[in-house]
Length: 184
Image 1 (tube, one colour):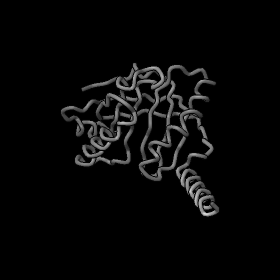
Image 2: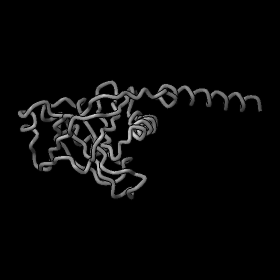
Image 3: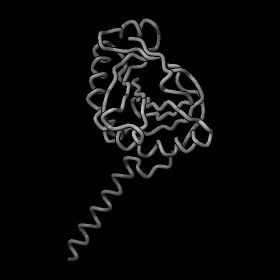
Image 4: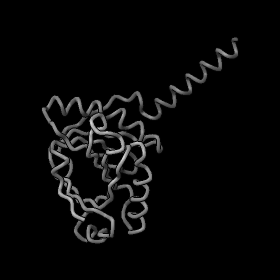
């Protein structure tokens, strides 16, 4: 019985250590400032947010094969998963283009271009540890971001994630996602 108890305590300590490493217990530092102002080229994903990884990695492959920085990617979420059925959720995954020549280079069949306006935003940065960070980050960051954006009276907001090499920036931009400018 003593060995079982020691094993159980050891497993709990290891699990808590791993969760701490992944940032589950981090205090979210919500910042306020300007975000957006990006020209994007990418693809839409229809369905559950939990199944977006294939679409994301397809876009990474497109960006990489065209010489783009794959640590300069962004996902825009068009629906609130608490209000829209899982199979009807819409997400845009794209690469941030720095200028018109990059935007022209990513004018490929099947890609859509979106202009994400610059504006007032609340955001937080979450350290990227491994692929599990993409699952843990939203759970840790969005509640704090929605709390602050609600206090500011922002409704609706544009939710997006900016993926960098060492961290992901979670952003709620004051605005309506349905008013974004898209071009095929």
